[in-house]
Length: 180
Image 1 (cartoon, rainbow, N blue to C red):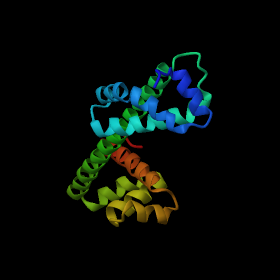
Image 2 (cartoon, one colour; image 1 turned 180 degrees about the horizontal axis):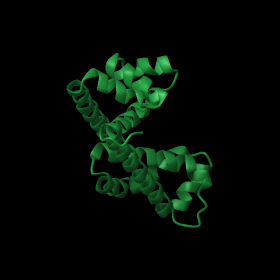
Image 3 (cartoon, helix red, strand yellow; image 1 turned 135 degrees about the vertical axis):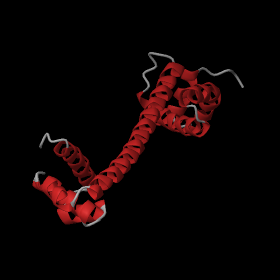
Image 4 (tube, rainbow, N blue to C red; image 1 turned 180 degrees about the vertical axis):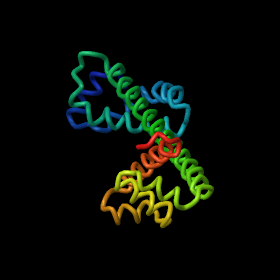
């Protein structure tokens, strides 16, 4: 078998010989995988992103202009796919941390409520805007879940969480004597 260039392989693929894409996979998989492992620091994520990158390259071949080398174009796909994975992992991590912080805030706020007498708590809640006060009453005093509150208030669960978060901030300000 003669040594085919990337352009020859791509032309063959575009003519309908999809199996020839395996030649490109064999040629670039090791270097791309090494790059991904260094970037993602996780073998499973690197394998998954590599597969996604090859799929993107395969389906994008018809748009490859051949103005640059295939390797440059492909490694660009790999790099940007890795960045996307990193940003999604970072976002997921931040959401988990926010959840932990929210749980911490909920527990500390419940403790604050338990140490205050009921009338001062009611006074503080009455100073909140209506939606916020409703969310606080339902969550803390009625001990309803965010899903139940969402159904009652006809808003999304994430909006309930936002209301509760903002309510906690308002209540902190009220308890410090700054008002709403």
